[in-house]
Length: 172
Image (cartoon, rainbow, N blue to C red):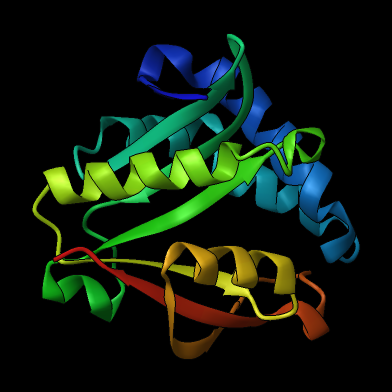
């Protein structure tokens, strides 16, 4: 497993990886045409161009045997109140389901933690859907701790899945 930093030149490839990996995991979480709207909002050309030019945001391809099997996004200056404490947020991490259980997610998270430490951040945080017990258990096993409850405020996302847990990993 390797992380390959994405650049503006990689937008079309990044979009394919984002669409595929997100859709394979979360397509069933949406009502109506919400999935399509979300994918365009989050991974459309305009947004990705802006974010890939922002020095406080980094996208990485998760690669395995030279194949892009997922992606992640780190925001070193998130709008969350936690970021005012010199923290950073792992906003997204999605790996194609056929690669789960191979230790790839664990290795990717180890690299994310290293990158946050290199940026002198004090805390890494993330949000996870509170019904995603496997992901919560995975993060706890890595040393993340429950911080607080929050909620997704996204149109067309199924109401029963909007609950979120904010989890934190101390870096110092």
